Length: 280
Image 1 (cartoon, rainbow, N blue to C red):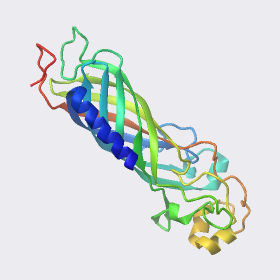
Image 2: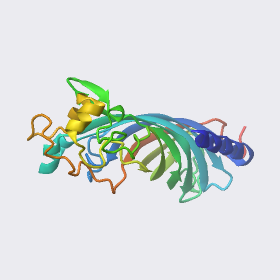
Image 3: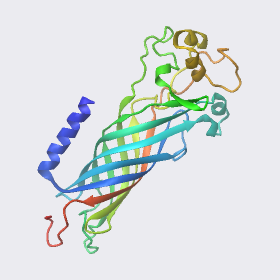
Image 4: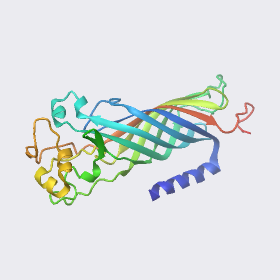
């Protein structure tokens, strides 16, 4: 968290000196995740995403920096898969994702927020963006009509005698956003950005699924029966038979990803002057 604060302080120090035009805005759209419970299907099991954006446009007209804070929900369920092995595994999760951090935007063509001149083509542009963000997750699983936090249950035997070297995964993580968009001016103050971005994470536990099934008998003794129940929910077993002990529960070689897509409606803080690039 300290690293993120340092990054944000540095970001604001830079833009206060060199930036030209500030904007504030709101983001609304959808969110989904790619991982063990949804390996390939983009836009599958989409949930909501909302946020706020602060953007600065540089004199260069090809570069903009922004800080955004987004709150979203992601989820995945084996029951929604067409794969027989996933259907039988029968795991599911949902998690709130809170993300904050700086991003760099690279415009394909010169762009001035607030400009309405179609002759100079500075009123719209496609763009790419990338950055580094902090996010917080908290995977939950369904149990008797409620949702319960999965990380404290150590469903893969973390920190138990059978997997003592593996610590519980952290709920606070870093991600690398990468994406593209298209922005255009509606008025001399208001602009819209349509964008899609995917986040590379460095955890395989956004969905609480990564490694192998633990010994359920031992897990029940050391972590509780609820941990054993949430660890193995396969449809063709009853009780703690340990038929899956040592078998793959997930694919630990691939990290999880999550994506946001939607629209940003932003407001230019200073009025645009057509006679120059200066603002009031």
